[in-house]
Image 1 (cartoon, rainbow, N blue to C red):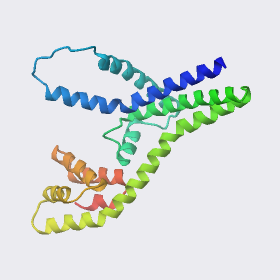
Image 2 (tube, helix red, strand yellow):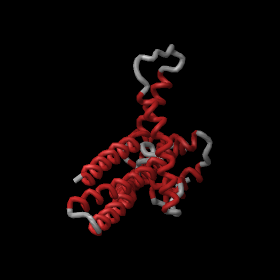
Image 3 (tube, rainbow, N blue to C red):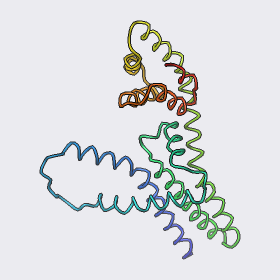
Image 4 (cartoon, one colour):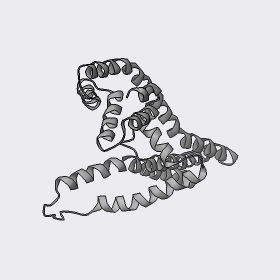
Length: 230
């Protein structure tokens, strides 16, 4: 009974940590926007700095856990994870290190859940089997979710591609430059393909060459024909 209580308590702690790591990038961006909005204004301390303390505690933990996951599976690289997150449409909300840390926390949560279920069913070898099975599911689950998001998003993008390329071609034939045609496309349409064109236009505006920016977009969305539209 005591083992079950400890396992359930550990599971609750793991769930809390998972939610904190998942929402950390959003809180960081919100904090950055708030700091930018109040830049130059006198600052007043109106309460405890729980958020900053929590962030200082979570960031090192997230970093260590993410690096531990990379050591467990050597095939993971930050660049590879970043590309997969961008392909899934999550690159602006989830950082590569946050994703890796989430995998680690899900794996730990799976172990705790397996131990709890094993203890409830009598313990022993059954508990070990449950722990290994749930740890594997927890560790692989985020990858499966990302793969499904990528597949679904690419199907949507392929369905939007003909109309988008037609509008780009018409705009260019009407005398617009390529950048202006992309801007017109962003204005007239929406969806995941348009989000990709918006990111590509931003990259070109900060100095990225057009062929390279389009090749990067083609890598993200899995449509090689885009890279030839120069």
